[in-house]
Length: 263
Image (cartoon, rainbow, N blue to C red; front, top):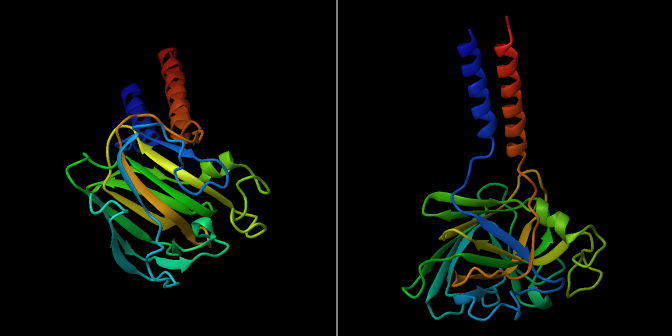
C-alpha cells in the first residue's frame, strides 16, 4: 500500500516539475538607457565579431499587417541575411513606433503565428547569439520565441521587462521623439544574449489576451565574440514551477514521515 501511494505522489511531483519544461539555451536580457533606440556606442571594444541592423526605412510603408515577405542583408553586404515572413505590416513613423521619429517600423496585430525572421550567415561567424530591437508601445502581449532548427531554445514574455522599466509616467514612458504622445506605454531598446548556444530563427507574435499591436524597429543581429553584456539586466524572479516543485518535495517528505510512523 505504501508503494502504491508513493508511486501516485511520484506521478504528481513529475507533473508539477513539468509545468515549465527546461529550454535548450540560457539567455540574458538587458535594456538600454531611456530614449535610446539602438544598441549604442557604449559596447565594449571587440564585443561583436559581426553584427548588422535592419531599420525598415528602405521599404515601402504598406500599413496594415496582413502578411508579406522580404529579405534583408542587415547592412553587411550579405555576410548576414534575414528573411521576414508572415503577418506583418511596415508603418510610417507615428506615436507608436519609428526610431528617431522618422522612417518606418514593423508591426504585427496577429494573435496567432505573427511573423518570423529566418537568419543566415557566411563562414565568418559560427551563428547568431545576439538580437536587439527598439521595442515601442510595449504591452504584455509582445512575445518572442527563439529557435535553432526546429528546436525552441528560448521563449520571452515581457512581464519582467515591464516591471523593470517602471510604471507610467516615468522615464521610459511615451514616444521618446514625440513628447506627450502615447504616454501610457513604455519604449526601450532591448537586447537578448544567448549565453550557451546560437539561434537561427525568431518568431514575433502578439499574445491572444492583448488587444494591441507588436511594434518594433532597428532589429539588430550578430555574433558576440565575448561574453561581455551591455545595458541594464532585467531581474528574473524564481520560476513558479520551482516554487511548486519545492512545495511538492516538502509534501512528499511529510508523507514519507507520516507513513514511516504509521502503525
